[in-house]
Length: 274
Image 1 (cartoon, helix red, strand yellow):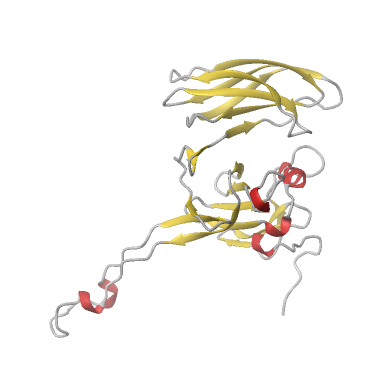
Image 2 (cartoon, rainbow, N blue to C red; image 1 turned 90 degrees about the vertical axis):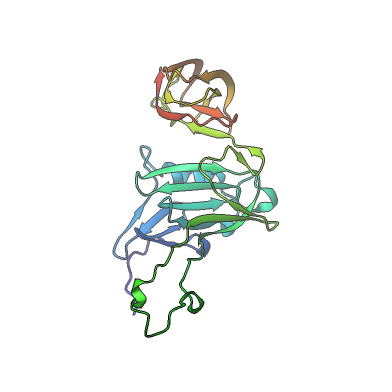
């Protein structure tokens, strides 16, 4: 028979339920992402002060048709990948995703220029020893079955557009099927939120192998779609800390670094001056 683990959580969106080596993960009806080992349940979203986690709040603000959300476990990257629809999703199919890395316990938001209907973590066919490969007679064969080599296939994640095109994810890719990738890093809300504060400047600590053009956008952390007033800058190969003046007064100011020229800087940290 079944034993009850918890009454407070559950989901109608079965395509988000994924078995991983760390436990079973799913998108709950309250738009929080949970994991269970069969004995206890905990949320994977990081808590931002009081109230819901940042992941729950993001999904509550963005997700539209939850029934079209789906997920998979990426064995190669050791992460849970949740794909979901938003207001800008083509044809109502998921064009946004949240990747949860189990190793460092971080979330990585993703956007795609096309709708993705499903995906799978695939394993290339292994190379096996067949009868035709064994040329010796039974009397001349001295090896045991376990001695024959088996070449294991490579794992990979393939996703599928709603029109049937299959796409493969590469961490080194600089475009999405020909469309430039819009890379973004966004801060949390700065200040207490009870009174207006002035965000003066942002410092970016980075390493980069080739110069990248970037821009810093500022806005209100509680209104994630209202970022504006971009300030253009660049990250050079000298890897010096980059100073970017912004100047924004708000009750809950936040900043966002954007990059879409194909560069791949490694961001170490941000510093903001209020």
